[in-house]
Length: 170
Length: 442
Image (tube, rainbow over all chains, first blue to last red; front, side):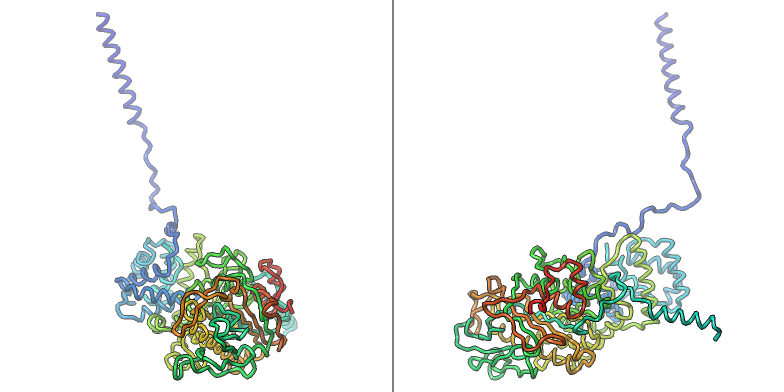
């Protein structure tokens, strides 16, 4: 009889402990704070670009970007030689890019398309050239710039991005 | 005008006049007027020249054991040309039988000072050119890397406060890492003081015609200005991450001028009116474009690199032909400066030196004329000459001789600095191997 009572007490104690543990785990859980703002990336968007493109990489990537097709190996060698023949790379890049812009087959949105939705245009341009999202500060700058410079064309924007230092890195 | 307004205007005007230029060196004033010349042209001559066929004027005697001697560089050197077995000229009846007519009435040797036997301690083209441009023998310098010591371009731009478009480096190609010497990686100097490098036979050659010629020259205010504004914004964002690109510092105006120059050169090339020497082609075309650069930009310092005589590794005939042509090219360059560029005539100095010599002993390669070929690796490679001419440089002066070396390629950089009037500034940097210029050896 005594043995029976002892077993019952042990079982009751075990049940009470399990219940207490369950209640303590399931109760008083703190909710994640919600501040009603969007998540932002704390690292800079371009921080992972650390390697400088070689002249060959730069020009083949640029060509593929502007013409949506690969540059032939012969032309790659010829253009690379042109780049190496001029010391000021900004100058020679600008000349090569404007030469590209004069060629048939270059894929640049029309100015009317650009002006129809400037926000979308600049977002797409950042993705196309920098392979990243635009930041709000950048968006603000460009939208204001386009507004104050109504004659800026899509070709000029593409040229500026092609010449920019961030585009030299990957 | 009221008295108070008059005083204010006068004070502002006086301040503007007396306000010193703040140079990038941190100095308040440009180097004092001790310059001997306003412009200097340095020709890194030919690319591995044996003393025997140049200043010693032994033509085929030493190299081929054939008894024909004489001077095949008669724009540079005094002396009669060979009379027997003429192969160094242009093609007449047979290849090389027609020497190119002399251009200069008076040789550079008689117009200036020649060091007939100088020392070059480097046996490679890039190392030798590196020495000429930095005043240091950099034996640990990698072939495919920029110089560790400042170049003469950087000294000129930093210590004289010269803009980028006034310092040019014209190469005859892009091989042998030649383009890398437009500036060094030295932390106190670097790209912001670099030269405008140009290899014109490529830029304006078939590659350039195909990929550069058809470029637009954008309108400076309506197109370039907003384009650059956008680029500067993008670059500032990038720079805020602590990243930047090397930049030799051409201003927007200078860039526009250089692009316009490119456009003009393509047109002149097409029309066949580039200022080439009477005999052109090959690297002599680089000389023609160098003349055009000088006419357009009137550089404070121009360096012209020639290297075609390096064909001597396998073709001695080609070597003497190219030596003769290089002499012709330099004669044309000097003549053009004196007669076609009024702003540089009479106030330009010229310095010439090969970056190295060539071997005494031949290799095993025989050319079509049966002539032996020469590399550059033995003690004879250390033997070179040097010469200079221009304002303040003594004429008709010859120093040193076959068994009496005088001067070293290390003396060239201080000499350029002395002629342009900033030697003390350069020496105070403590970065050149010697403080002695060629003038100090006279």
